[in-house]
Amino acid sequence: MQDFHYQLLAIILYMVAMLLIGWYSFLRTSNLKEFMLGGRGLGPITTALSAGAADMSGWLLMGLPGAIYAAGLVEAWIAIGLTVGQYLNYILVAPRLRVYTHVSKDSITIPSFLDNRLRDNTKLLRIASGVVILVFFTFYVSSGMVSGGKFFQSSFGLDYHLGMLIVAGVVVLYTLFGGFLAVSYTDVVQGTIMFLALILVPLVGVFVTGGLGETANSITAVNMEHLELLPSTAAAAGIISSVAWGLGYFGQPHIIVRFMAINTVKEMKNARRIGIGWMILSLVGAICTALVGVAYFQQNGLTLNDPETIFIEMGKILFHPFVAGILLAAILAAIMSTISSQLIVTSSALIEDIYRVLFKKDASDKHYVTAGRLAVLVVSIVAILLAWNPNNTILDLVAFAWAGFGSSFGPIIILALYWRKLTNMGAFSGMVVGAIVAFIWGQSDALSGMIYEMVPGFFSNLIVAVIVSLLTYKPNKEIEEEFDRTLEILKSEKES
Image (cartoon, rainbow, N blue to C red; front, side, top):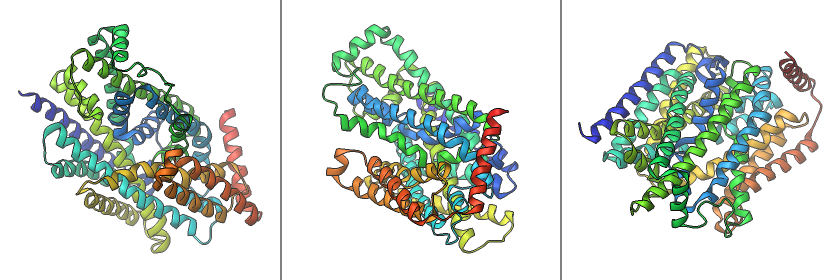
C-alpha cells in the first residue's frame, strides 16, 4: 500500500467516526434546548475539550507553528495572551454565565441572555447581537471551508472544490442532525487527537535531532535570537498587541456558550483545570514542533517553502504513513471543530434571536428544531458560495472577527455579569461603538500597525457602555432580584 493510501485510510476512518457521533447525538436530541445547548447537561471533560477545540482551529497546528518556525519564540506572546485570557474567562465569566443565563428566563443564547438580563422591550439589542453573530460567523465558517479545501489540495492533491465539499458535507451532516451535542462530542474526539498529535511530534522529533542540547544548538545556528522570548528587536507595542488577543475570549459566542451548557457550577473548577491544562500543553507542543522542525531542517540541509506546513512535514518524516495520516486528521479536526461550533451558534442566533423574535413566537419545539437544522443548511450553503473562489478578503475577516467579537460582546458580557446598573441602551451603544472602532482601526494600516484593534475597540466599548448606562439607569425590581438570586446560587454552590 502506498503512503498516500495509508494516509487517506486514516482520514476516512476519522470522517466515519464523526458521522457516527452525529447519528448518536441525533438520537439524543428531541427539543430546542437540547439542539441549541445540549440540555445543559455537559460534563467537565466535554465542556473543557469542546471549548478548547472550538477555539483553536487550524491556527494551533499550522498558523502558530508556522509563525514560530519563521520568527522564533517572540511569536509565542500570542499564545501567552490567549492562555491568560482563557484562564480569566473560566474564573470571571464561566460560573456566573452558567447561573445567570439559567436564572434569567433560562436563556440559551448570548443575545437572548442580554435581552432577558437587561429587560430590553425594544428587542433592539437582541436582534443587533444576532445579526452581528450571523454576519461574522458566516464569513468565519466560509474561511474554515477554504482551509478544508486547501488541506485536501495540499495533502492529497485533490481538487480544491472537492476537498471543500467533503469537509463541508461531513461537518454539516453531523451538526445538522446532532446539533449542540454532536458538536460537543465530536469536539472531545477532535481535541484529544489534536492534543496527542502535538505532544507526539515534538517528543519523537527531539530524539531524532539529538536531544535538547543538540536541538538548541541547531536552532541558534539558524538564528541567534530564535530562542529568545524578548529579542532585542521586539517592540513593546508588538508584545502588548499579541497579549491583547486574550481580551477576545470574553466575547467569543462559540466559546462562552460552552460554559452555559455545563451540568452544574460545581463542575466548572474541574472543567477549568482540564481546559487550561489541555491548552497549555497543546500550545507548548505546537511551539516545540516548530522549534524541532527548525533543528531538523538545519541538520539535514533542507528548505521548507511554507513554514505553516512544518507540522505536516514533520509528521510525514517521523512516522509511518498511517500514523502520519492520523496527524493529518488532527489538522482536519482543528478545522472542522471550529466550523461546527460556529455553525451551531450561527443557527442559534438566526432562529432564537431573529426568526423567533420577529416572526414565530409560539411555535412548537419540533418546529424550532427543524428550523434550526434548516438554518445550519442555509448558513452552510452561503458559506460554501463565499468560499468557492478563495480570496484574501475572506481570510482577512477571520483576523478581524476575533477582535470584532471581543470588542462587541466582551465588555458587555462582563458588565452584565458584574454590574447592576448596566442598561439596554448602555449595552447597545457600547456594542456598536466597540465594533465600529475595531473595524476602522483594523482597516487602517497606520493604526493597526501601532497596536492591535482589540485594545481600542474593547476599551471604547467599556467606557461608552458605562457612561450611557449611568445616564439611562432606572432601578428595576426584577433585574435586582435576578442579580441577587444569581449571587445567592453562586455562594451556595461554593459552600456546598
